[in-house]
Length: 522
Image: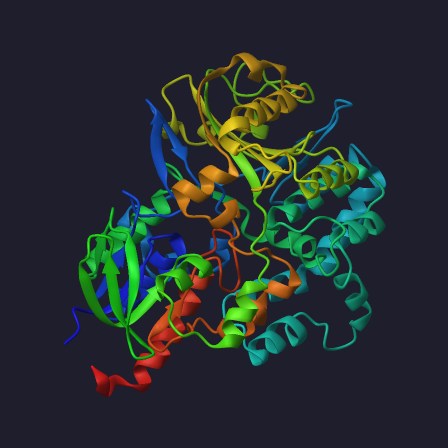
C-alpha cells in the first residue's frame, strides 16, 4: 500500500492550489519543498530587520478572475486582500502623468489631460476588446483542449460571428496595434509596458492579445494580500494542513521513483523513499525531466522539449527598505503617500524606449535604459515596514541570464541595481538617498534561490509557440506527464506564468477526473 495518495513536488503557488483541491477532495496529500518555506516564488520574508520583502511575485491581479479563493475558502485561513486603486501610474520626463484607475471614466479623464483624442480612443479600445479579454481569461480556467479553446476563444469572444475583421489585429504585435489605436506615445507606453510583463517584445507577431486583455484590469482591479504576497501561499498551506495534508519544507526531491513506466513515488536528497499512487510536479518542466533520472522518454517528448524556448533570463528586481516614498517630479508628494504610491509605477516613456531595452537584451547585455515598475505597497499596507519607513520594489526588463561580456551576474549585479535606481531617480530624485537596505535579485539569484531555471520567471517564454496546446509541448499540454502516474502543474503548463493559480486548479481537475475513472485501484 502506498504511503500517500498523492505526492506534490514543490510548494509554489500553483502546486499548493493543486494540492489544496486534492486535499479538499479527501485525498492523503504530501507536499515536498526544497526551500525552508512553502510558497516557491510567492513568499514574503523579513530580509532587512523590520521590513517584509516579497521574494517573487508581488501584484495579485489574475487570481481574482478565478474561483480559487472562494473554492478553497482561503479567507478562513487568514487571507485578506487590500484593494489598490489607482492601478497604474506613469510619470513622464516632461512633467505630465497618467493614472489608470479601475473606473474607466476616471481613467479617461486622466488620459484627456495628456491627449484629449486618446481619451475617447481608450474608451473605444476597452469596449471593443472586453469580450476577447473575458474570453481569454475564461480559456485560462480550463485545460487547453481544442474544444475548450474553440468554445471560449472563438465563440465566447465573438470572433466566430461577424467580427472576423478583428483577427488581423490579433495576429499582429501589440506595439503595432497600440500605435494604430492611440495617438499619444504616452498612452501607448502605459498599455504596452503592462503587456510586456508577459515577456514578448512589442514587435513579436501574435503578441497583441497581451495588450488586448488590458480591459480585464478594469473588471477586478488590483489587489494585495495584507502582510505581503506570501500570505496567499501561507493561507494555502494552512488550508492543506486543515484537510489532513502534510507539507515538508527543506526537503529536496532527488528522483521520481518509477516502476516500469509508472511513477510510484519520490526519493528525497537524504535517501528517504516515499510512495504514492500519483506524483504531481510543480517544478520547471526541465527540472521535472531531470528528476526522472534517465527514464526512457519517448523521442517525440525529448525532441519537443529540447526545442522549447526556455528563455535567456527575463528581468531582475531589487527590493529596497527606504526612509521615504519616491517623490515624483511629475506629481510631487513631499508630505508622504499619494495615490500614485498605491499603484504600480511605470518608468517607460514610450514604445521606442521599451524596444531599445529589448534590443540590449538581444545583444546579451543588461538594458542600458531599463524599463521599470516601482511598487511601494507599504503605502497601502503599513504592516510591511516600521512606522515612517517603507518598502520599495523595483522590477526591470530586460536582463539576459547569459551575458555576452562573459561576466557573471555575481560580478555585475550590484552595478545593474545601481543603474536601475539611478533611472528611477531621474523621475523621483529623492530615492538616491532614501535606501536603508536592499536585496538584489538577478536572473542568477532567481535560479539559485527560487528555482526559476535560467532566471525566467515564466519558466518558458510566453510566445505563441509555447502557449495553450503547445505548453510545455504538444504531447504534455494536458497536465499529464511523460510517464503514467505523473502529472504536471506550475508555470511550465497552461496558462503559463503569473500569480493566477489556474494551472494548479486545472491540473487538479485532470487528476480528479482520472482518479474517478480508476477508483478501484485504491
